[in-house]
Every structure is written in structure tokens, then in C-alpha cells.
Length: 237
Image 1 (cartoon, rainbow, N blue to C red):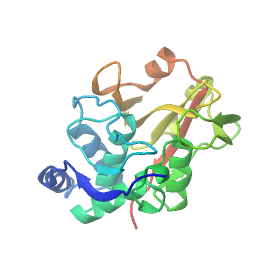
Image 2 (cartoon, rainbow, N blue to C red):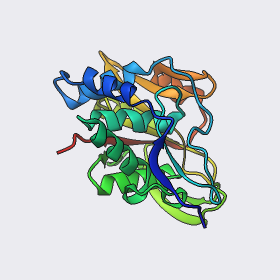
Image 3 (cartoon, rainbow, N blue to C red):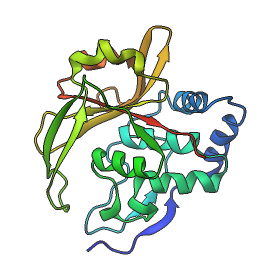
């Protein structure tokens, strides 16, 4: 059993969030909001396990603009892009991170397959991993201590499909990189940014030690993986 959760954010500087939201005020499109928000954090340090917690620990609602891992970077950017007020931002971040928006370790989206499914169900993202170029993978997820093991199946694009589906990618799309391990679904996630004929990846890189931007094709070439999943964040109605 988890201890009593605390839904009020810990160590949160509201002024930083208000400034970030104000900077997005005049952006003309949702894609521009994601571009601007993701740009603002380039160079910020990588943070190992920024949410902390565990099955026997009190779960705190963590919001930091100082350092990120790959998931918290994506969550902060999307929450900012989908919000116009501070309260909306905080509520959006809770719902992105936790099933039903309730701050509890057991309800946190520890696996990105769950993150994608739950946020797709509530209309925050769209899974665009479809078509003849996809393949189905099965995984027995058990890497997170404290969660029951479960079997899942999902679609992905093999790396070799990237040249064929490259033009489908839009700025703001999420790229989820699928692990080759049987007990893990996704090992990394980032945000795509399209510039001319290039697709760049903005992400919090552990090896780089900070939030960086690099060519997506290079990332695919440099890392061993089963493939990747594409998801498109949606503007809040």
C-alpha cells in the first residue's frame, strides 16, 4: 500500500510557470506553442529519477523547470502547450502523469504504453502509429518493482521504415523509442521538430546530461531499438 499522497506540488516556483505561459500567449498555433515551450528548456540539466517515490513512499506531485528526465520534459512541454492558466497547467500535468489525475504512485504512468493509452483515451494525444509499415510487438512488462507484471501488445514502426514515414511527422509529435528488452516497452521519448527537410529530436538525454536537439535520423542510427511509436499531442478543446 502507498502512503497518503500529496497533490500539492513540491518545490514548485509558480513564477516560472507563469512566465512560461505568458511566453506562449501570442503563439498562433498549437504547433508553435509546443515549439516555443520545448525551445525554452534546451540546455537545462538532465535529472535522474526526478519524480522519486516508490510503492511504500508518500507520492508527491513534483513540478520542476530546473531539470528533467525524458518523460518529465515531454509532460511539462505538453502541459504548457495545452494550458492558458496556471491552474489549467497544473491540472493538465496531473492528468498526463497519473491515471484519473489522482496523485498516487500506483496510478502513475510508469510504462509509456500506459501513458499513451490513458492520454489517448482522454483526448490529449493521438496514436499515429498506423499503416502497412507497422509491426506488432509483445512485451511482458515487469521492470518496475512494486507493480504486477502484465503482457501487452502494441504497434511500432521498425527503424528501417523511417525514410518512408518521415513526411508524416509534424512538429510536436512525440517519438517513443521501443526497447529490445522483453520486460520493458519504451526506453526513451522526445519531441519532433520539423525544419525544412529535417526532423529534429528534442529530448532530455542522460548521456548528454541536458536537454538537447539532434537529428532524429542520427538518434535512430546510434541506438539499438526495436523501433519507434509516433503520437500527436492535441490542442485542448
